[in-house]
Amino acid sequence: MDTTVNFNGSLLLKDTNFLNHENRGLRYGDALFETLRIINGKIVFWEDHYLRLMASMRILRMEIPMTFTMEFLQEQLLRVILANDMENSPARVRLTVFRNNGGLYLPKSNDVSFIIEASALKDPYYTLDPSSYEVALFKDFYVNANKLSTLKTSNKLTHVLGSIFSNENNYDNCLLLNQNKFVVEALNANIFLVVNNTVKTPPIMDGCLNGIIRKKLKEIFTRLGNYAFEESSISPFELQKADELFITNSITGIRPITKFRKKEYSTKVALDLLGKLNAKAIAERT
Image (cartoon, helix red, strand yellow):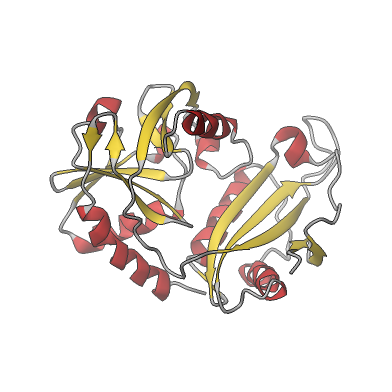
């Protein structure tokens, strides 16, 4: 079956040439994206994704079309699912919004276009992969901690180069540092550190992505009350003192880190959180 994408409401085969060399996402990284899970035609944490997208568009001074309601974009996402015969299976969906062609650094217009694409997922709900997962620090380039670094923009060269470094050195992932040498996030996920009964994650002001699963785990920790939860800077020296490290994103959910340098980690807290995250995902499907 040929994969179908949604470009501004028109369903097109994925190999259709509908973008050109003037695309501002290509030229300047002038684009945002959201990556979502859709299970049996239900979008997981859709309201959170939608509100983050709207806030990010305002920060980037993109003109938000009157049609860009939560209901309209939900309909457009589900049209792609139906067109690709994924309405009864789990899917990974990417919604990209970019400023329209025209201008150099200064755009001729702040109007936007969107693309929606989908691919199949193996599991309908979050699972915990028990295999080994080793990470390293990526020190060639740093995350510049500011409001832009917290957004899901298409400006991801540090993450691209970190991924190449990770692959060349047989690591499963890398951890990124900001200009103050604090641990910010993994290449594709937020990071959490566990020491005794305390769970830490970097604050947004350190430059980490304002992640959806990060937000959901914060809500879980607040409700549970059996973990001390902190948003505070993480020094690289703390990594080897931790009992547990895990990373989170909207597609994988929770992924335990099993090794950093010579330190190996448990997965106790990650296992405890998995069922609670899945329950939240089920309850908050749209």
